[in-house]
Length: 196
Image (cartoon, rainbow, N blue to C red; front, side, top):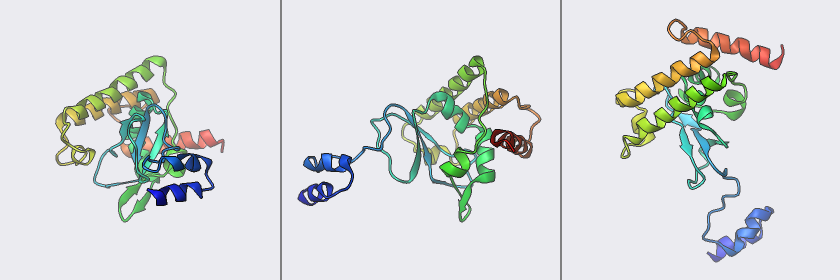
């Protein structure tokens, strides 16, 4: 404990120095306050959906995840949709074949929908449906729940409902649009977004 105290006292960070007299306390100055979304930095390419978390500030995260502070159910719903996953699969980096989720490449360049208030509320409801479906399996990890061969039917249905709702917010044809067509339209939206 004394070594931790001394290390903190010698830090250039004022926040770290303030914690020197509490050497057993985690240094969490960069943790978000309130609700936030957790996105794994690396995820299996065999998954249809990256298993993202919806957390509150009572949960500490490791440095192997991306955090979205002040993440709402609306954000959680859009990020967990097949629209965002199609974008991610197209633009993300790779570690061998696994997906590498980057804030600068995947998230910052993603064209978000411009939903009506009714559509936004519907996305929030289907996002909550995903969380409710997960809650039915308290003994299962997200890795277990998002294994494509064993994903619980309730969770898959919740994701499919969310997919339809998010696609509707984009004005995409839920029944006819392929993933390639979805990505092509997102790329067009990206070009419009950056003004080229």
